[in-house]
Length: 172
DNA sequence: GCCAACGTTGGC
DNA sequence: GCCAACGTTGGC
Image (cartoon, rainbow, N blue to C red; front, top):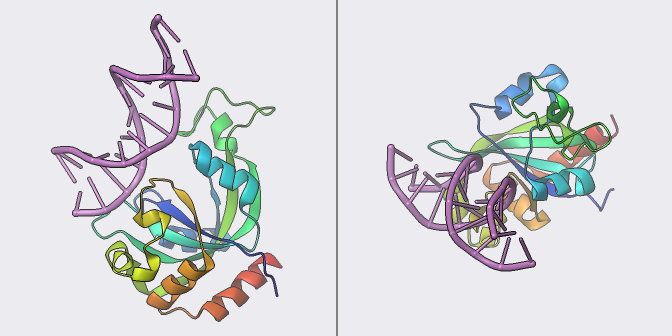
């Protein structure tokens, strides 16, 4: 069993890219591209590894919530949308030699039988330390194993089963 | 739609 | 390298 798995929360506006859209993507997988914040970039480039668990969070809607679980299948590599003049994420400062921005690949793992809303998370004493509930507008945030387990429990997902699914994702 | 929080830009 | 101005995020 792997002991170095990390956990993350990825934010997305569902009108832009939803958890359901990830599920419908080819193979249930997609590039997590377009991130244009240095702190988030550093996590993508340096820390996020295949097999890591992702809480897929829907932001900027009436009831913000964690919609489900995704898994990382490919660690950080250059985000080519930054080089594409036709992309809305184009960044003219970037080149092949200096990509600046990075992305990872994620795959659908499991939806929450019960969506975990921001409001419910705020009500959980054990989640008081979560970055999401404190300051950050950061779109990629680390999540502790304890926070991960609490949120899975709130959403009626068995953490042990999800870990097995993340293991199998990692193995291909 | 408002606005607080906060990241980025650019003049000095 | 400071910091004011400005832009963006995202909950409400």
